[in-house]
Picture 1 (cartoon, rainbow, N blue to C red):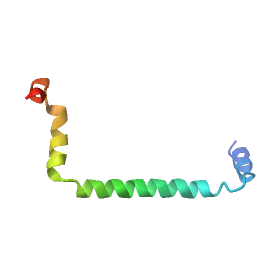
Picture 2: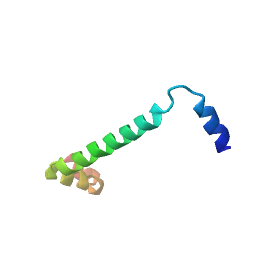
Picture 3: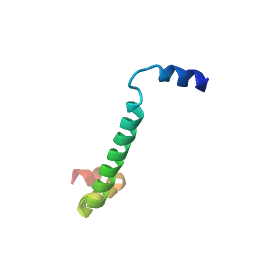
Picture 4: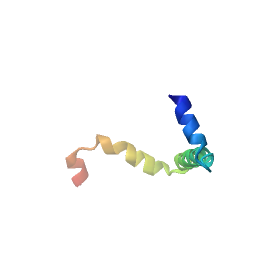
Length: 61
């Protein structure tokens, strides 16, 4: 089955760019995600940590 798919994909002109683009998008996304995590303000992170623990009464005040 894989031989059939591989053989079919080799006939498409310019297809070799798609794996490179997907790797580049994946890499850039995670580099930006790590950058955001390490540069996020601590008070913002602490506020987001507390959201699941709040009750409806706490949110109204």
